[in-house]
Image (cartoon, rainbow, N blue to C red; front, side, top):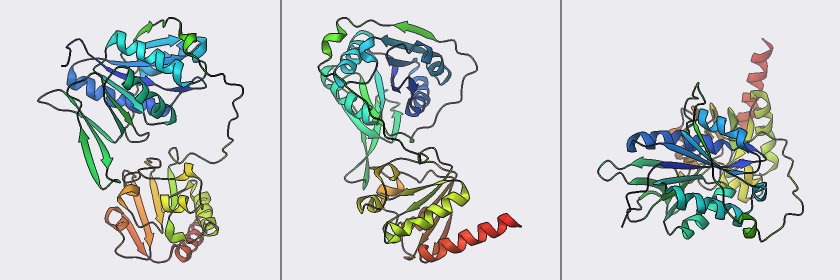
Length: 335
């Protein structure tokens, strides 16, 4: 039975190295919409150490209130201390809805909190809406390998919890003022939940642009034939000021790194220009790029599903067509 004291839309404000992750701002944008439908407020929950100054940024992106748990143990993300801290916040403030980004941290944290507060969790959501008749949160996610979209409700338990894929939701317009309520919440004996010790953090150096930040993406699939053939896509990306992405088939074949993957099991992207080369357009891939402003498809198979959503389509071998395109762009640049 749902208890009426549960109220408010809460967003777990993920921060890494004292920098708020972009997915948090996306969730705050959606949180504003959901809160308006429920006539309630949006609250960001910020965990960390010496991170109070990040609260103003969260308010500008839509938070009416920021709850801060500031503790030295929370300096670096660790499963147990973060779970204990967020669980305590949930049990005290009783939110009706709690959203997380479907990041490595969010996917680790969310199920543990949901288990401790005895509620459900819908993972990897791509759409969130309020059901008018009941005010329940309708959480939509791909199911059965992405072949259908399932809408899930949690009518009997609170809070309603969901992880949302980065890049799916859009940030709200920045507020001019930063007048929001800031509350500090103290969790007693938080250091007792620390059961591991971090000896060293070694960061992977990535000199390539994140595909989620790119305005131009040149994406290759199985039809490229080999890792070597991606060199021509790299050249086109350089000419256009973008970066290279890939389908799951290309990543599974070892032609590109996992962080280059677009699609249901990869990243969701919204570039101004998406050029799909040798990609058939399975529904799992389309779910990650169909919101691109302009989509150009190059494929030898004229019946490939990618052509159904492409703004422009070229039937042919990408290995032959892309070099011609590069040549034309370079010639135009010199005119």
